[in-house]
Structures are given as structure tokens and as C-alpha cells.
Length: 510
Image (tube, rainbow, N blue to C red; front, side, top):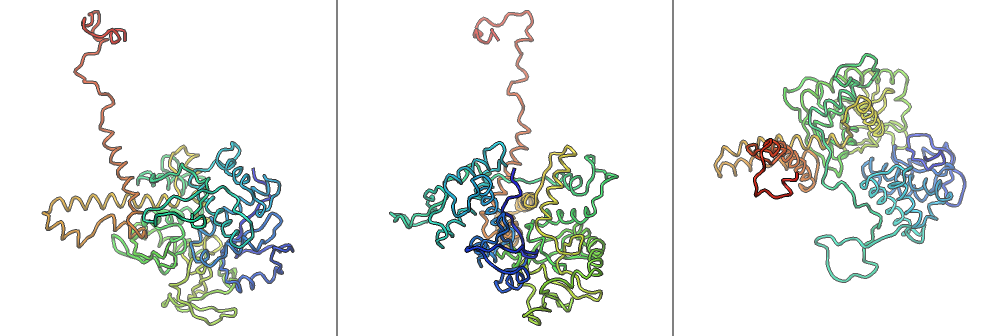
């Protein structure tokens, strides 16, 4: 068990403790933190590390706040910070209060044993271990380059040559090194997904709080069950990533009366992974649930927060003055007061301070809000999935889900349905008609690729493996459980009759 003497991850919209003095540590008074963060260009919500003594160590935090990292997905930033915090905590607690600068290869071997093999450790899977190890390795690689440490404190090996890489002898400096402790038990092409009935069972019991028979429980007090169910339904019906959906603006989601089928809307590239902006399709049932949340639960928390003056206390707010022009906002305080910003260019963190000036007053531009009327964090949504899984387990159900599983479920089910319809249409055509049809309507695999935001079809091909497994499971169900010909007469049915004289002795003995 890890004690309170741990490295901790914090986020920049919270109050920062005063750091202690030291040669390697930033010295600044607490009341100057907000101005300093703005001067450094560090956005709200960015993770930073504090030591067990609440020391803000400049070196690892400057690594976390590199420009290329700050421009990357928020989820990646947090995973990177948590990986470093976990390793630094282990060094502090289990390796004689070692500083990260004093780490050795033995420390990393001990960390691997505790994380993966120790009965008292978390026993994580290979994929999680390799991801965490990569984060720690990249930090120490950067630290060595900056001369913060003399060597990378983990065993390394030569990286395998990639296909297409130049061949020939390379000098020692040119050989790429990677951690030797990477796991070899990653899941590979295996993906997790839920058939539609299983997903609905997980949602109703885990999120809505129904009992195992699918009926509402009298004593369930899930204040946000409807909102959370609408959130998971939208994930599983559109294939968005958690961060993509969690940072949508109200103006970007189709609401109100709409078509009987699907509503088309644009996911901005500023919040899409690898800037994969794309068209998405929202089914009518999901649209109705989102509209109900917008006009009921969301409106209620906005009114309460507005009355409490919470929106007036947001630091350096960006305000959309004209709801009819939702793409234009401007700063209303600070050194940049009056400066205009194109909302379509704002990333996930910047959207948290984006407000809309309506006839009733200010309200957040982001769609998904918590009970205090403020935008929900990604960790809150992850906690919601954890709580839902725990309810399913308590109810005796096998279904478990997480945000990315919803994305996998969308991909597998959509691909199967489109492929089935595509093949049925082609089967009724001659070769010339098939070619014309494919030129117009394209390929189901490529359509799903676009909806998922994959840059290459190779990333989407993993879902074909799930369809192949599903097809083979269906076929295997038709294979009889015995290969015996039912017309054959079992030996025990012969009664007192003697077996044929030419039957082998070992068969007679049986």
C-alpha cells in the first residue's frame, strides 16, 4: 500500500501550495502563481508534480510543460504525469527515499517486480506496464540530454529495425535504444466490445441503477443517471473518444427537433486526436436524450451557478457576446482584454473558461456540466465508468465497460451492419454495376475509418478481427460436440453379445 508520502499530480486550475526553497526548485509566493502560469503560457488544467514535501521541482515540470506536450491530448498529458508520479513515489517509499536523480537500474527492476509480479502490488497488464515504462524512459532520455542525470537508469536494448529503414552498419550513437523491460504479453489485436443487448444491460444496471432484471430500484439515488446514460449512449453511437466528446460545446451538438434518422454534425479538429476533424452522425434517440438533459438538468445547474456568482469568478474568461455568432469570443479581463479569438481554434483546456452571454446571463459554452454548473473533467467521467462497473459486479452481471470499449463497440457493430448491406447490394449486380456502385458509395471499412478519425485503414483493420471471431463463433456453434456417427452401435448396447473376434484387445478392454 502506498502511503500519503507520495508524489502527487495536480492541475493548474486548483490552488498551488507554496513550494519550499532549494537549488532545484522554483521559489515564488502563492499569490503570484496565477500570473506566473499565464506568463509561462501554461493552460488551465495542465498537470504538474509536487514532491511528498510539496516541492515544485522545476526539472520534471518543465518536461511536462514542453510545448509539444501542451499541444497534445489532455489525456496523454495526464497519463504522462501519473506515470512519473507513480515511479517517483516508489523511489521515495520503497527505495530509501531516493530522489529521482539517484535512481538506478536496480530500482527500475524492483519497480517492475512490484507492479507486475508482487502479490502485494497492483499486478498490471503488459500494455499498461509498457506505456508507463515508455513515459518514464522518455523523461530520463530528456533528463540525460539536459544533463540532469548522467545515464538513463534502466536497462536498454537495441530497437528492432522497422521495415523500410535504411540498412547497413550503424555507429553506436546511431543505434536506437529502447527499454529492455517492455512487456511481451500485450493484448495485440484483441479488442473488447459489447453486443448491443450487453451494452444496454450494462448501461441500465451500472449507469441508470436498475436491478439485474432491468427494473428501476426504489432506493437508487442517482441524481445524474439520465445525463450519464445520455453520455455513454452518445459514445457508443458515434465512436468519439472520451476527450473529444467531453469537450464539445453546446452549439456543436444537434439538439431540439430533428430528422427521424440521423443528425450530422462536425467534430472540430481542435479537440480531435491528431486534428482528425470529421463528420459524425447522431441518432434520433440520442438526440432526444441530449435535448432532455439540456433543457432540464443542465439548465437547472446553470441557473444555480449563475445565482451563486460562480461564472463571475472564472479567471481570464473568454466570452461569446453574441450567441448567434458562436465562433467569436473575446477576453473580458487581464492583459488581453478585448482580444478576439476564433472559438473553432480553441483546444480542450481553453474551452473550460469559455462562456456565453445569454439573455439570462452567463453560462458555460461546454455542454457537459457537473452539479456546480462547471464543465466536467475527464477523471469524473472515468470515475463514472468505474462506479457503473462496480454496480454491475454487485448485481452479479459479467458486463464491464470503459470509454474506449464504447468506441470499439461502435466500430464493430457499425462495420458489421454496413458490410452486410454492402455485400447484399453488390450480390444483385453485374461486374460493371458493382464497380460503379463502389465508386459512388465507397467501402464500409473506409467509412468507419473516417468516423473514427483514423489516418490509415491499417488502424481500422483490427475491427475485422472481431468480426472474424464473431463469424467463427457462429460457425463453431454448428459443429456437433461429438464426431461419432449416430448410426454406429455403442459397445455397451451389445448386452451379452460377444464383440467381434477381430476387434483389437485395447478396445475390448474399454
